[in-house]
Image (cartoon, rainbow, N blue to C red; front, side, top):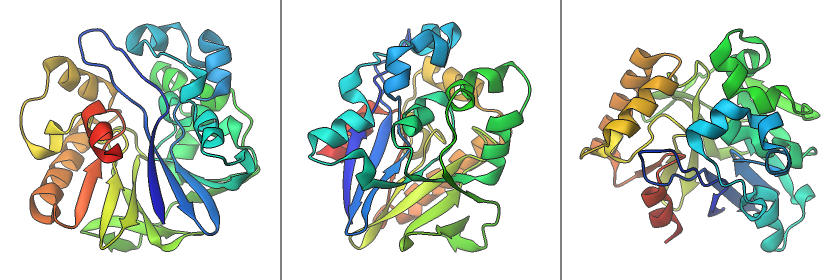
Length: 260
Protein backbone atom coordinates (compact mmCIF):
# COMPACT_ATOMS: atom_id res chain seq x y z
CA UNK A 1 0.00 0.00 0.00
CA UNK A 2 1.30 3.44 -0.92
CA UNK A 3 0.68 6.34 1.45
CA UNK A 4 0.38 9.87 0.08
CA UNK A 5 0.05 12.93 2.32
CA UNK A 6 -2.33 15.72 1.25
CA UNK A 7 -3.05 19.11 2.79
CA UNK A 8 -6.77 19.57 2.23
CA UNK A 9 -7.17 22.90 3.96
CA UNK A 10 -4.77 25.58 5.15
CA UNK A 11 -5.91 27.30 8.37
CA UNK A 12 -4.59 30.63 9.63
CA UNK A 13 -5.96 31.16 13.17
CA UNK A 14 -4.92 34.38 14.85
CA UNK A 15 -2.02 33.96 17.24
CA UNK A 16 -0.63 30.69 15.90
CA UNK A 17 1.39 29.52 12.93
CA UNK A 18 -0.47 28.33 9.84
CA UNK A 19 -2.04 24.90 10.22
CA UNK A 20 -2.95 22.19 7.73
CA UNK A 21 -5.69 19.60 7.31
CA UNK A 22 -3.52 16.51 6.98
CA UNK A 23 -5.28 13.84 4.91
CA UNK A 24 -3.93 10.43 3.91
CA UNK A 25 -4.50 9.00 0.45
CA UNK A 26 -3.88 5.25 0.42
CA UNK A 27 -3.29 3.49 -2.88
CA UNK A 28 -3.75 -0.25 -3.22
CA UNK A 29 -4.66 -2.66 -5.99
CA UNK A 30 -8.30 -2.42 -4.86
CA UNK A 31 -8.56 1.36 -5.25
CA UNK A 32 -8.02 4.51 -3.20
CA UNK A 33 -8.86 5.15 0.43
CA UNK A 34 -8.97 8.56 2.09
CA UNK A 35 -8.32 9.04 5.79
CA UNK A 36 -10.39 12.18 6.47
CA UNK A 37 -11.18 14.56 3.61
CA UNK A 38 -10.48 18.11 4.76
CA UNK A 39 -12.63 20.78 3.13
CA UNK A 40 -14.59 20.04 -0.03
CA UNK A 41 -15.88 21.84 -3.09
CA UNK A 42 -19.13 22.87 -1.42
CA UNK A 43 -17.18 24.50 1.42
CA UNK A 44 -15.18 26.52 -1.10
CA UNK A 45 -18.30 27.54 -3.01
CA UNK A 46 -20.40 28.55 0.03
CA UNK A 47 -18.17 29.09 3.10
CA UNK A 48 -20.72 30.86 5.29
CA UNK A 49 -23.54 28.50 4.43
CA UNK A 50 -21.45 25.39 5.01
CA UNK A 51 -19.09 26.39 7.82
CA UNK A 52 -20.73 29.36 9.49
CA UNK A 53 -19.32 32.77 10.35
CA UNK A 54 -17.98 31.80 13.79
CA UNK A 55 -15.80 28.96 12.51
CA UNK A 56 -14.49 31.00 9.59
CA UNK A 57 -13.56 33.81 11.97
CA UNK A 58 -11.82 31.42 14.37
CA UNK A 59 -9.70 29.38 11.95
CA UNK A 60 -9.57 31.65 8.85
CA UNK A 61 -9.36 28.87 6.24
CA UNK A 62 -7.90 29.60 2.80
CA UNK A 63 -10.63 27.51 1.11
CA UNK A 64 -8.63 27.05 -2.07
CA UNK A 65 -10.25 24.67 -4.57
CA UNK A 66 -6.83 23.30 -5.51
CA UNK A 67 -6.40 22.04 -1.93
CA UNK A 68 -9.55 19.92 -1.96
CA UNK A 69 -8.99 16.17 -2.02
CA UNK A 70 -10.93 15.78 -5.25
CA UNK A 71 -8.73 18.34 -7.04
CA UNK A 72 -5.51 16.77 -5.77
CA UNK A 73 -6.67 13.28 -6.70
CA UNK A 74 -7.48 14.50 -10.21
CA UNK A 75 -4.02 16.08 -10.45
CA UNK A 76 -2.55 12.65 -9.68
CA UNK A 77 -4.44 11.17 -12.63
CA UNK A 78 -7.28 9.47 -10.75
CA UNK A 79 -11.06 9.77 -10.99
CA UNK A 80 -13.42 10.43 -8.05
CA UNK A 81 -14.87 6.94 -8.52
CA UNK A 82 -11.42 5.48 -7.80
CA UNK A 83 -11.95 6.45 -4.13
CA UNK A 84 -13.70 3.38 -2.78
CA UNK A 85 -13.49 4.14 0.94
CA UNK A 86 -13.28 7.09 3.33
CA UNK A 87 -12.18 6.44 6.91
CA UNK A 88 -13.03 9.24 9.35
CA UNK A 89 -11.17 10.14 12.51
CA UNK A 90 -14.26 12.19 13.33
CA UNK A 91 -16.85 14.34 11.57
CA UNK A 92 -15.78 17.88 12.45
CA UNK A 93 -16.18 20.35 9.59
CA UNK A 94 -12.49 20.59 8.70
CA UNK A 95 -12.27 16.81 8.42
CA UNK A 96 -15.54 15.88 6.71
CA UNK A 97 -16.31 18.63 4.21
CA UNK A 98 -15.02 16.65 1.25
CA UNK A 99 -17.26 13.62 1.82
CA UNK A 100 -19.81 15.11 -0.58
CA UNK A 101 -17.26 14.98 -3.39
CA UNK A 102 -17.11 11.16 -3.31
CA UNK A 103 -20.74 9.96 -3.17
CA UNK A 104 -19.90 6.41 -4.27
CA UNK A 105 -17.32 5.80 -1.54
CA UNK A 106 -18.02 3.70 1.56
CA UNK A 107 -17.79 5.76 4.73
CA UNK A 108 -16.24 4.20 7.85
CA UNK A 109 -16.99 5.99 11.13
CA UNK A 110 -17.37 5.34 14.85
CA UNK A 111 -21.06 4.71 15.62
CA UNK A 112 -21.04 7.15 18.55
CA UNK A 113 -19.50 9.85 16.37
CA UNK A 114 -22.14 9.27 13.73
CA UNK A 115 -24.98 9.50 16.26
CA UNK A 116 -23.57 12.71 17.79
CA UNK A 117 -23.02 14.30 14.38
CA UNK A 118 -26.61 13.54 13.42
CA UNK A 119 -28.41 14.51 16.60
CA UNK A 120 -26.31 15.83 19.50
CA UNK A 121 -27.90 19.12 20.67
CA UNK A 122 -26.15 22.31 21.69
CA UNK A 123 -24.11 25.11 20.11
CA UNK A 124 -20.82 23.22 19.86
CA UNK A 125 -22.22 20.30 17.82
CA UNK A 126 -24.17 22.76 15.70
CA UNK A 127 -20.87 24.41 14.69
CA UNK A 128 -18.51 21.46 14.49
CA UNK A 129 -20.91 19.17 12.61
CA UNK A 130 -22.50 21.85 10.44
CA UNK A 131 -21.24 20.60 7.02
CA UNK A 132 -22.14 17.00 7.84
CA UNK A 133 -25.66 18.03 8.78
CA UNK A 134 -25.96 19.89 5.46
CA UNK A 135 -24.52 17.08 3.38
CA UNK A 136 -26.07 14.22 1.48
CA UNK A 137 -25.38 11.06 3.45
CA UNK A 138 -23.25 8.57 1.48
CA UNK A 139 -25.08 5.53 0.17
CA UNK A 140 -22.74 3.17 2.05
CA UNK A 141 -22.00 3.94 5.71
CA UNK A 142 -20.20 1.38 7.87
CA UNK A 143 -20.35 2.31 11.56
CA UNK A 144 -18.35 0.62 14.31
CA UNK A 145 -19.39 0.23 17.94
CA UNK A 146 -17.23 -2.71 19.04
CA UNK A 147 -13.46 -2.61 19.43
CA UNK A 148 -12.43 -6.12 20.49
CA UNK A 149 -8.81 -5.95 19.37
CA UNK A 150 -5.76 -4.39 20.98
CA UNK A 151 -3.44 -2.23 18.89
CA UNK A 152 -0.37 -1.43 20.99
CA UNK A 153 -2.63 -1.53 24.04
CA UNK A 154 -5.37 0.67 22.56
CA UNK A 155 -8.87 -0.73 21.84
CA UNK A 156 -9.24 -1.18 18.09
CA UNK A 157 -10.89 -3.10 15.31
CA UNK A 158 -10.05 -4.02 11.76
CA UNK A 159 -12.00 -2.32 8.98
CA UNK A 160 -14.57 -4.37 7.16
CA UNK A 161 -12.83 -3.82 3.81
CA UNK A 162 -9.10 -3.60 4.54
CA UNK A 163 -8.03 -6.69 6.44
CA UNK A 164 -4.91 -6.36 8.54
CA UNK A 165 -3.48 -3.34 6.69
CA UNK A 166 -5.59 -0.83 8.65
CA UNK A 167 -6.67 -0.62 12.26
CA UNK A 168 -9.42 1.65 13.58
CA UNK A 169 -8.13 2.79 16.97
CA UNK A 170 -10.14 4.48 19.74
CA UNK A 171 -8.72 7.90 20.73
CA UNK A 172 -11.63 9.57 22.57
CA UNK A 173 -11.79 13.01 24.12
CA UNK A 174 -11.78 15.54 21.31
CA UNK A 175 -15.18 14.03 20.54
CA UNK A 176 -16.80 10.99 22.13
CA UNK A 177 -16.31 8.91 19.00
CA UNK A 178 -12.92 10.25 17.96
CA UNK A 179 -10.70 7.63 16.31
CA UNK A 180 -7.19 7.12 15.03
CA UNK A 181 -6.42 5.26 11.82
CA UNK A 182 -3.34 3.02 11.81
CA UNK A 183 -1.92 2.14 8.41
CA UNK A 184 0.69 -0.55 7.88
CA UNK A 185 3.78 1.21 6.57
CA UNK A 186 6.51 -1.23 5.55
CA UNK A 187 7.64 -3.03 8.70
CA UNK A 188 5.91 -0.51 10.96
CA UNK A 189 2.80 1.62 11.30
CA UNK A 190 1.67 5.18 10.65
CA UNK A 191 -1.03 6.30 13.08
CA UNK A 192 -3.13 9.24 11.96
CA UNK A 193 -4.30 10.66 15.29
CA UNK A 194 -6.77 13.21 13.94
CA UNK A 195 -7.27 15.89 16.58
CA UNK A 196 -6.08 13.80 19.54
CA UNK A 197 -3.25 16.36 19.60
CA UNK A 198 -2.70 19.57 17.64
CA UNK A 199 1.07 19.94 17.92
CA UNK A 200 3.88 17.37 17.90
CA UNK A 201 5.04 18.64 21.29
CA UNK A 202 1.81 17.32 22.78
CA UNK A 203 3.13 13.76 22.54
CA UNK A 204 6.87 14.08 21.98
CA UNK A 205 7.62 16.71 24.61
CA UNK A 206 8.90 20.22 24.01
CA UNK A 207 7.13 23.53 23.95
CA UNK A 208 3.59 24.04 22.75
CA UNK A 209 2.37 27.61 22.29
CA UNK A 210 -0.20 28.82 24.81
CA UNK A 211 -2.66 29.61 22.01
CA UNK A 212 -2.32 26.05 20.69
CA UNK A 213 -2.86 24.54 24.15
CA UNK A 214 -5.93 26.71 24.62
CA UNK A 215 -7.36 25.70 21.24
CA UNK A 216 -6.74 22.03 22.04
CA UNK A 217 -8.56 22.28 25.35
CA UNK A 218 -11.39 24.50 24.13
CA UNK A 219 -12.25 22.23 21.20
CA UNK A 220 -12.35 19.01 23.26
CA UNK A 221 -15.82 17.78 24.18
CA UNK A 222 -14.28 15.81 27.07
CA UNK A 223 -11.04 17.57 28.14
CA UNK A 224 -10.10 15.08 30.90
CA UNK A 225 -10.45 12.10 28.57
CA UNK A 226 -8.59 14.00 25.85
CA UNK A 227 -5.66 14.52 28.25
CA UNK A 228 -5.66 10.82 29.09
CA UNK A 229 -5.57 9.98 25.38
CA UNK A 230 -2.61 12.33 24.81
CA UNK A 231 -0.76 10.69 27.71
CA UNK A 232 -1.30 7.26 26.15
CA UNK A 233 -0.03 8.54 22.80
CA UNK A 234 2.99 10.11 24.50
CA UNK A 235 3.73 6.74 26.10
CA UNK A 236 3.38 5.08 22.70
CA UNK A 237 5.80 7.61 21.23
CA UNK A 238 8.30 6.98 24.04
CA UNK A 239 8.21 3.19 23.86
CA UNK A 240 7.38 2.32 20.24
CA UNK A 241 8.76 5.15 18.10
CA UNK A 242 10.87 2.63 16.16
CA UNK A 243 7.66 0.88 15.07
CA UNK A 244 4.92 3.51 15.15
CA UNK A 245 4.99 7.00 13.64
CA UNK A 246 2.37 9.43 14.96
CA UNK A 247 0.91 12.26 12.93
CA UNK A 248 -1.96 14.59 13.74
CA UNK A 249 -4.28 16.54 11.50
CA UNK A 250 -3.06 20.12 11.91
CA UNK A 251 0.69 20.27 12.59
CA UNK A 252 2.26 21.79 9.46
CA UNK A 253 5.78 20.74 10.45
CA UNK A 254 4.71 17.12 10.87
CA UNK A 255 2.96 17.29 7.52
CA UNK A 256 6.05 18.61 5.74
CA UNK A 257 8.20 15.93 7.33
CA UNK A 258 5.75 13.21 6.33
CA UNK A 259 5.71 14.37 2.72
CA UNK A 260 9.51 14.48 2.70
